Length: 179
Image (cartoon, rainbow, N blue to C red; front, side, top):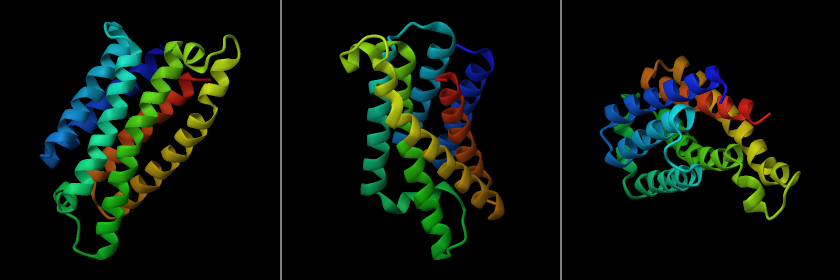
C-alpha cells in the first residue's frame, strides 16, 4: 500500500472514531472503531482477510442507516446545530452520506485485495469491470462529502466538518490507490 494513502486512511479513521465518540451513538462508535481497526490492518498488518473487512464495513454502513431510521432524533445530538430546518436537513444528509461511505469503502477494499477477479468470475481485465461503477459512485460520494464539509465549515459545525472531511479524505485515498 502507498505509505501516504495508508497514513491518510488511518488518520481519517481516527478522526471518524473521535466524532462517533462525541455523538455517543453506540452503533456509530462500533462502526468507526471497526473502520479504524480495518484501516490499520489493511495499511500495515494484513492479519484479517480483506473480504472479511469488506463485509464488516458494508454491514456497518447498513447498521448506521438502520439506527438513523429508528432514532431520527439522535441526529440532533451529533452537532449543536441551530434549530433551523436547513441545519437539521444538512446534518441528516451528511450522516446519510457518511453511512453510505462504509459500503463504498468495503467495495473498494475488495477491489484492492485482488478478490475482484475471483468475485467477477474473470481473470485479467475482469477486475476493472468489478470496480468501474463503484469507483464512479465513490468519486461522486467524495464530492458530496466535500460539499457537506464546506457547508459545515460555513455553519461553524466543527465536528461535522471533521467527520465529512475525514470520510472524504479516506475515500479519495482509497480511490487514488485504485489507479
